Length: 203
Image (cartoon, rainbow, N blue to C red):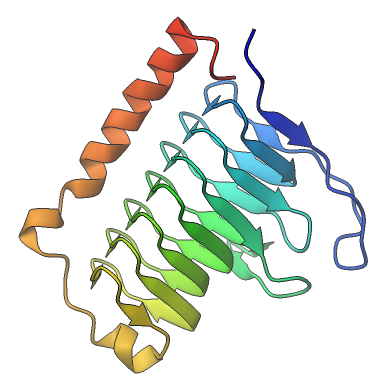
């Protein structure tokens, strides 16, 4: 009755010679018209909404940790070739540690690490960064150029962080936003389970 999400193997190219299919937990929920390509691990209780593109066809694999929500029209890709982040002696193009919120129209582009309980707002643009745990990256922000952001830091709406000195000077997350991500993670966990139980709109 409804269109399904699309899961594909990646095509081989010089940068990625092996062919891999996504690994998607039976406890995850993926909405219609989302496309997941290549060596991507989707863990338990992840919610991937509608019309997202997660494309591991140009570099190292991706990991989407438990309880993460990827909302709608999100793009996930990686710089071609050998650039990566390294977690427990394994190389990854994109690594979302878990309980992350990636809001509508965000671009999360590797090499990239995002720590647990970090929020990425609408239309945020992240390309080549290490972002700590419990951070809030607000709507329309840009984080790029290999910067590393410490735990518990706040990037304001529309702010551009591309020099390490700017990343080092970021303020702590304000009190009014400290529990923002936890509430969104809880909502999308429950929403995903309800989609799976009551509709044909999710895998």
